[in-house]
Length: 316
Figure 1 (tube, helix red, strand yellow):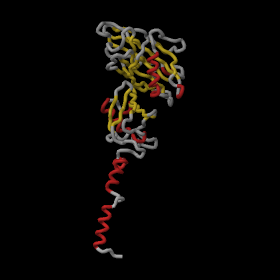
Figure 2: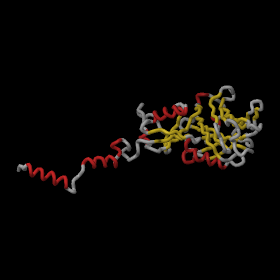
Figure 3: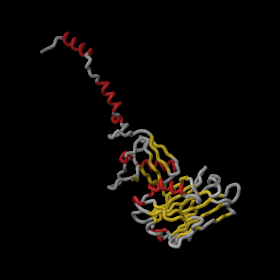
Figure 4: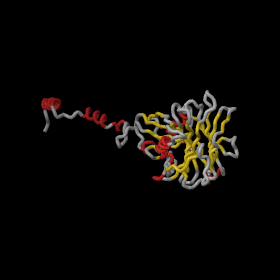
């Protein structure tokens, strides 16, 4: 059946006035607003693929990045290096209890951040490796030197403490022993000792040194936390440059690694670093911590709580 021109015109007018008419253009626009995945703003699970995400250090420093600028774990490590000067092989990144790997196990294929469900507002923990102590190094002992500058008022003391933790997996994080000014040695740990006060008046610097043969420690010991804390002073803020360095006592002039707290502000204590045993090969790794805490040698409980809250990051 052929329609006359007038009939076609009447049909068009009726269509324009129809209440049920579908606006295809508006549907397309509305769908784009409801489902931003078409514009690359969310992934298939509805998670944002643009926006800010953060990398946080244990000392509280927070670094901000953009998802649209950084897609892979490798690119993130390079961006972190640009801001912090920490080499990519010294970075341990953890998100929701999982360590981020740069490449797949099958080959040199870079892993994308999206594969770890990192989206806008995600927070990633950065752990900085200071030194790896492999068995091949044949180092019989190590000295962990905790030191500080004298305040303007003259010679004053901080306390250097080493806390030994045992356990693995769900049983990790069990405090076993403390070395400090009161407990400088234990008969059942013959290859570990605390120096007590070593005051260098000419250089206006105080030291507490803990020397240990890590290989000879009981197999159950998995972590050593090193802490500086105030004794009489209300905080360690007026002690210049609370620091840590590690060396082989047979070669004291060769520094293996070091770390300095830039500002301790009003805190009583600072957890300087941790030596953690790798459960895969038994080697030890020394990680920067720099975490401020309440507590001191008169009351270790707040320090133990602070350690308990972050011990998971150094899991074995």
